[in-house]
Length: 141
Image 1 (cartoon, rainbow, N blue to C red):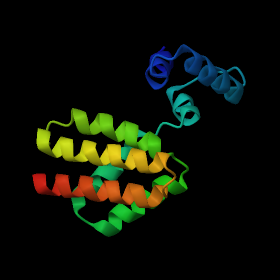
Image 2 (image 1 turned 135 degrees about the vertical axis):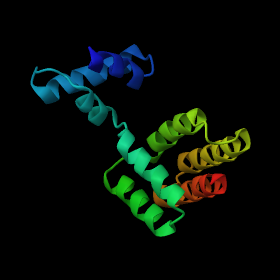
Image 3 (image 1 turned 90 degrees about the horizontal axis):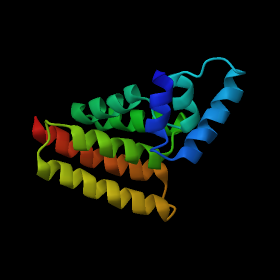
Image 4 (image 1 turned 180 degrees about the horizontal axis):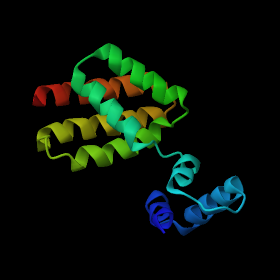
């Protein structure tokens, strides 16, 4: 039942998307139980651990760590637009950031989203975004 509620969350209430994801997951598992992990993989959702790793590298203040984590995200095949959507939700929910810090990050998220839609390089846009997130998180400490 947990996978079903997660499927609803991932499909963002879009029944057609949920059905497509469920069909793909069922094919992948040969009719066995569909787990949350399978839904995550099929939907292209970035695991929370990877996002937490990105935020930890941002908090470290080390650009080298940030570059390595960003390269890893891209090498793993995750879409930059998916990262933007998930990162937005995480940033909005964080209580250790001021409204001003959140707005600076949200503005950069929007800018990066537009640049990606226009065909910009994912790595360069994610590094640029991560640098702004780093600046705001380090400023907080």
